[in-house]
Length: 272
Image (cartoon, rainbow, N blue to C red; front, side, top):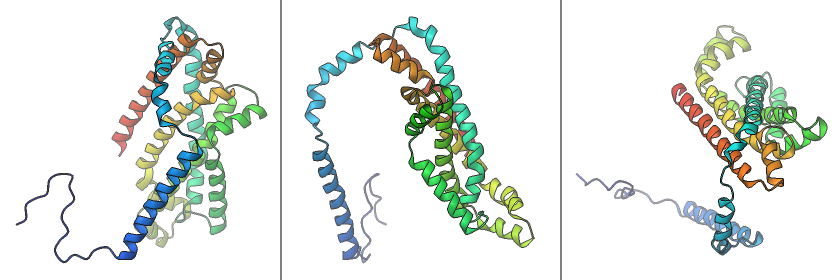
């Protein structure tokens, strides 16, 4: 009996086992070569200088030294911080409400017909291809600075991301229960409710919680373009060079985001 190999080392190739075909190996080497070549081109085109990261270390630490939090700023932090959480929450709820019907329209096994499926997928691709910060900048111009553009931006962003993940989950559902209900004469809605949703409910809830995590972090940045929340206060303090106030905002935001992530991870672990 052969001795077991140490943990982490690949097992030796069995005697007589065929080696990968020459074409497959050449394709792998070619792929690695292309990736390396693109990395070199990008490195040179962006004028990236690794040495500057070390030569500028003194300025880096000096700047962060000025971010020592001024905890007296807490009295003006809480309200925009709560607004940030509310923007993320409302955006997630609205995005989820819109995404759920689109998920089943864009999935091959639950779509009404090929045309509606194609239209739904095109809409979701458009929503997903535009970053949330760009959505916020557009809606600040259309609506007005404040929380509303942030909510709309996160709603669109949530629809795009959640519908993409949800559609892939629905399409991977076991087709057996679907075929059984359809053979019994059940319509599309009953098939979704009784055959598809029980299979994907836990995973979909996990995706929704994960979307809320992303939206909490994103809602902080949206304030930089006038979409309300703690980000708007952070941008103002940066413009006034109030680095101690910036440090307090960053510290409180970090704790809140960390707490949201921890609760979300715990909830997802209970679902899956």
